Length: 157
Image (tube, rainbow, N blue to C red; front, side):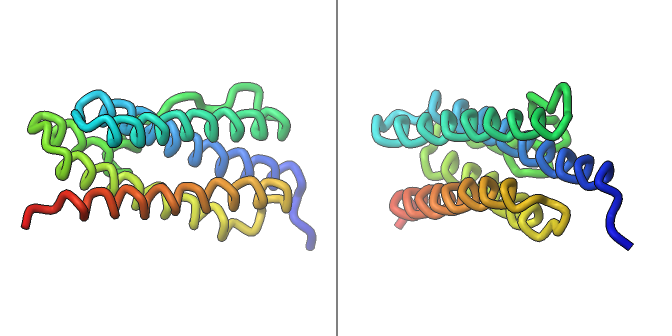
């Protein structure tokens, strides 16, 4: 029996809203981290990822609206931030230690990668949505790897 199209759209919207929350948490986390690191290169990289996440969230909000969601989520969530690893960033920021801050950014990125992988396994998302999510996933995966590399370059020896 074919799936009811009314519920397919709802499933896609739920997937989009989950990704938007993840992106908003990442946007905020990267912004906070960029404010606290002193090295100009790190500040720039973290600001770039904060802006990237904001742009991706806006893109997914537009897709949710196109699917009929009148008001897609526009914030992260406290529980989501805890779950996604960004809440510990505040403790790392207190130390102003770039290695610790990047470690927490990577933990947040681990969660973002996982959320995108979960979305890509969702068989209810359309081909168009899957293409957008895949494009964003690839960039987020690259950001994760870059953050990990930067963190590793600062590891205490």
